[in-house]
Image (tube, rainbow, N blue to C red; front, side, top):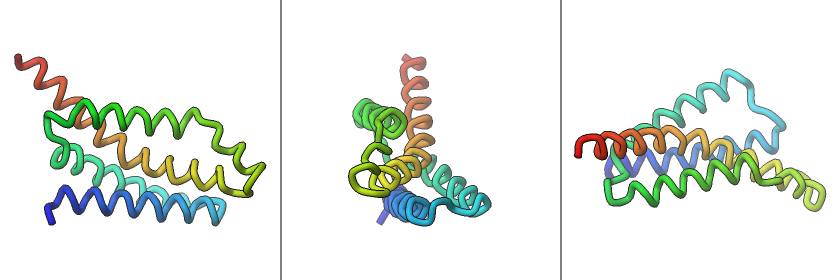
Length: 119
């Protein structure tokens, strides 16, 4: 297994576990949340540099934008009215996935801008 693949798998697992824990516990201790955030950012940077090839740039950036928008805009918390904590759970997981995906998106976007500027 390559380093980039491992970084992606770890990032997704950490984001899911942290999102579930935060939703069910109500909050994660700020120092632990900070450490989780730093780890997710580092893993996202690794994924951005190692996993996304030039031909995958557009699809990856569109998917990253979709994740960011749906985590920020969608009314997930209204689901709590139907099934308690469901919206909170989804929002929490998407938030941590966003912390993981955003740095990868920045790296991929910068690589794309650099490639365009070189031409």
